[in-house]
Image (tube, rainbow, N blue to C red; front, side, top):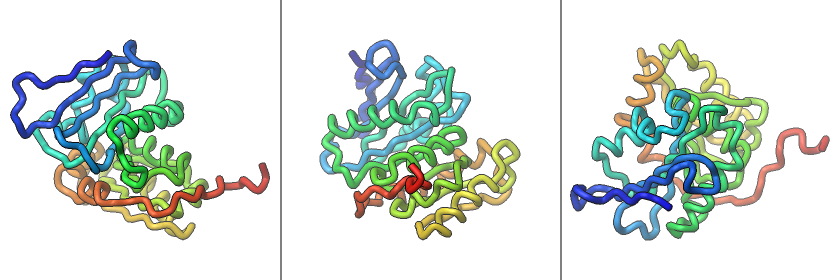
Length: 237
């Protein structure tokens, strides 16, 4: 069961589908935004921050991509916005998120080379974790104000990365992103960091999505190699 919200919308608005946690097998809320014609479009996954967790699906529009969509911003993409339960963080439910992505990609006939992921704050950490865990899946990842396990970055050798972080972030210091980006590049990958001078935590998140190349860049990426990169230390397994 789901709710398709169309009444009162302009002809140019994106369709919005809401599915609640007790209406699906994943046990989480999620929203899907899509234009009327979604043929041959990429799928963009957005992971929110810690303050948007729980069961109130309206909280998703506080920051990031859902905020822009609620403000009327248009994107030439199908956009999936899951909501993390309040008892965990994204890193704890990567298999659930991946299964939901797979289902959405199938429903909207998304080509396998055009599935990308971004996220902010806790969702930035989750974006790194999804990329590290499913290292032959995403066309690109764009973590905002996040961080991750730098020792696993050899997993991202074939996945383009564009990270963004505010230089004045005192909640998640920019060193988190610097460590990850430098480690990806040292492992032979392709990562860039946009440093937002003078920006704090939430300010950098909203600025990154509204005023930088992040969304345009990630939607333009296509995955070229589907060979799975061996997990770090796998020779010892």
